[in-house]
Each structure stands twice: as C-alpha cells, then as structure tokens.
Image (cartoon, rainbow, N blue to C red; front, side, top):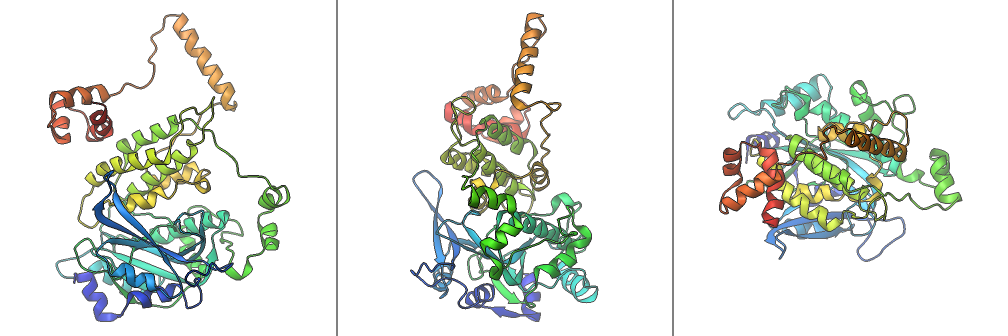
Length: 469
C-alpha cells in the first residue's frame, strides 16, 4: 500500500469493484444478459493480456457488462491490464460511435506531490482545495490506481452522447482537469504537463492489477454531482465559451426524442431525417497521415502522448477512403495499428517516471478514434490536446484545387528559369538505413551517437528501415 492509498484508507470507506460500478450504473440501468432490450445498453470492459498474438500484438478481450455486473467479477479474477469507461454502449465495440450515455467524468491525477511518506499533494487537494475553499468539486469516488489517482464525478443523471453534446462535454472535462491539476497538488512546472484525456478514455478497473503488481482500490468520498454544478466550478477557466451564455446545454436521458433533436439540431434533422442524406465521405490524401507521423516523432511530449496517437487515428480515418484522383493509396486500419504499435516504443521512451509509462492500453484506446465521428475534429483542439502546432492551410482565399494549380504553375516557371528547386523534404532515412546495414546488431542509441541525428529522427525511420533492409 503506497502513501496515497494509506491516506485514503485512513479517512474513507473502501468499495468493492461491484459496489464501485453499481454506483456508476444503478440497478436496472444496464441491459440484462442476452436481452437486447430497445433503449437499454451495456458497459464494456477491455482486458489486455501479457500474452502475444502471432503478429506480436497483445491479446485483448472485450466483456459486455450487463445489469448483473457478473463481468466485473470475471475481469477482476484475471491478472490482465483491465480498463473500462463510465459509459454505456450499443453493441460490442467500445467506440465513440457506439457510445450512448455518459455516467461520470473520470480525471486521471498523476505526479501528486509527496514528501517522504507525507502525501502533501493529496492533502492539499482534499483539505485545502475541496473542504476549506471549495475551489475543486468533491469527487464521488477516488481510485488508487498504483502510483496515481482517478477521481470519479458520478452524474446525477446520465447524459446522452450526441455528437454536438459530446464536444461540449469534452471541453467541460478539459476544464475540470485543468482545475484539478494545480501546482500545490501536482509536481508540474507548466500547463503543458497537465494530462488531458477525453470522456471516452478507459481507466484501470478497481480490483485489477496495477503496474506495481498490487490491486487497484476504490473509495467512496462524496455524492453524485450535476453537470450544471461542474460547469459552475469550471466557469472561471473555461477556454472556449459555449452557447447559452457560457453554459453547456446537455440532453439528459429522459429528454431524448426526435422532437427534441429537431429543436436542438435543426440542420442535422433536415439533412438526416427529412432528406435522409448519408454522412459525408472524405477523400483526403495519405500525405496528411504521413505528415502527422513525422510530427509525433518531432514534437510529442509526456502528458500529450495519448492524444498524439488519437490524432493519428483520426487522420488515418480521413485518409482511408479510396478515390482514384485524390486518394489512390488509402490508409487501412491494419496499417494504422501497425504504425501505432511501432510509435508506442518511441512514446514509451519519453517516460520520465514510473507513474506515467505509455502502455498497450493507451494505444488500444487511441485507436478507437478511427471512425467517422472524429473526422471533423477542429484544428485548434488538435493543437491543444496533442501539444503540436498544426498550421492552417494558407490559400489566400482560393479553393484548394485552384491553389494547387497555381502552386504547380509557379514551380514549373521556376524550373524554366533555372532556379534551384527542392523537391520534397530532405530525409534522414538513407542515413539510418546505411547505418543499420553497417551495424546489423546496433541499437537506436548507438545510431544516435554515431550519426549525430536526433532521437526523434532515428526513431522515426528505424522500424521502416529495419523492415526494408
């Protein structure tokens, strides 16, 4: 038992895994086993085994969590890495497209300040920030996940995850996380170190194995809380003001009808219900996907690694539709998975302490963003969550096709005039390839030292060169 857990154990009542998930999903809320009741959904737990498939990827298994919560017992009986989000889903795939209701916000709190055996950060959180000045809302439950904590804010009513609503809830969680990651609580030097995660993120389940081999424990610390109350706490730091005078308008379970949807989302209602139009199809060149892979190696930082991979999945989806003219070589989901696990090695190499390793579970979660729901994710949000600048396209008001045609004509004119032209960006891949051929047993660290190339550059080209060579 670590010092954080000892403090929680001294002041709060421990919850069993069943009690914890019953708090999130009250009796009768989830569907019963094998019933497929209309309007009823299930939770989804995912376990990641240490065993490997033939392709080298870890074995994973999905569990449908029904009203009896028997799947919780089954998962906790394993020694696997197990995660679950406080969300109900339609079907067996844990994707945002299948997500139906959000039951709680879960905030991952790492780098908590500790002096010897004194959990000063946790005491500052609870005694000073929550009880004395009421700056931070009191969580319903806290999970000791090993070296960090997960703060659960269980909602008084579940919230329907419509696309527009989901974006608003993502912003609310971002603000809530920023509020909690305070310098008196966490050992951080700047806001860049704040670990931002989305509402769909899965968290280590109470009763399952932690990184240090113990079992995660849950404690009851407060009551349920409304979305409106959370908005009041975060109103002072809200970065992007929402409609309705800064208040996020959410649709609660009892409000869901087409009549409400028609009133809230008239454009969507006209397109999808009245005109029966399909969702849009994207034909984006794979160049965008390849560019982002390079950006990850060049700019990923601890605290943003999950979102860097999540954006890779989003860009892969954008570039996954075949089009003879615009995208003759689309990105496949299989290719995305292969690239993500290769990049995982580099992201893990950035780890600066034992409480923030980048794991296969993080990769699995990030890959869930390979779906249509995320292809309109705004550029500003990509920059904020990934910590990597995404410059806007500068076309001076021209349409993309006209801008490309103009740039090509300018390039041809420069060639005619004999001006030097650099075709594409110079690559360090030939250097890495040559070094590997001369040093077949060499390591990445050896290559960095011998060639003088940066660590991100060597990692970027290492795997592909290894395969080709």
